[in-house]
Length: 257
Ligand SMILES: NC(=O)c1ccc[n+]([C@@H]2O[C@H](COP(=O)([O-])OP(=O)(O)OC[C@H]3O[C@@H](n4cnc5c(N)ncnc54)[C@H](OP(=O)(O)O)[C@@H]3O)[C@@H](O)[C@H]2O)c1
Image (spheres, rainbow, N blue to C red):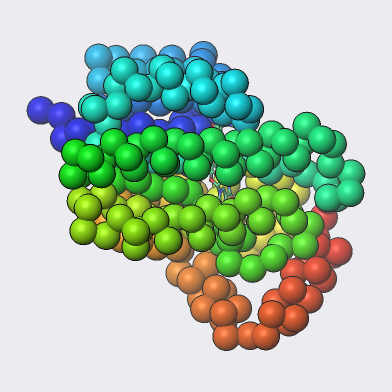
């Protein structure tokens, strides 16, 4: 018997795909979304077909978000858990980003996550139960020169999600923020990954397991990986100018694509 239904955005690769596999293995039905429908259908075929619903969508613009929210409304009452995982990072200097780069990054990382969270928070609050999980990043905690826009969008995700977890306290709806560090997926540049010591790089299945555990125990904040926890604890006890400066230095010396 199914333990419930989980909606996962960005389930066609990386962390989102691993989260989908983990919830499936734990006995949940899935609703999965992303742009690459062929990859979602392949995942559905590999898992038990009857327990997986695919909704292809582009969540980086208003029309795509509207279309997705329209399509998901038919399944709304079945969804017990929402995992807002879809996210993007455009490589390159902030001053070189195009208008489209900026609009799509903010559209996906901020607007889509906000509107999906709001739609499901309303519904879950009125019925008195539910869990929402937003995937931020360790980059949410401080400015990251070289990933300026991306880090700023993740700071938004952390701030919104933590405050909602308080606002919804006692409603039966929990809001969990997961802040992974560097994780081996398509998003991470191969050259950069090769230069990092292995203890600084997680696998998507490790992040998925931590996400599952955090959601099921209704934790407010989970930072997967001991190395990431140590680094963030250290950074939180330093002056902002020092953390900013170290980030700036790293951006100048680490390899570019
Ligand atoms: N990898 C890391 O080191 C790391 C660290 C911290 C946080 N994170 C966060 O973890 C999440 C997953 O990232 P990942 O590393 O697993 O990257 P990934 O493998 O590139 O996965 C990104 C997912 O988002 C979907 N997506 C991208 N653009 C989309 C759009 N316009 N509309 C709908 N879906 C879209 C992609 O599917 P389609 O291309 O098929 O649309 C894909 O399923 C992101 O929020 C990311 O910021 C990653």
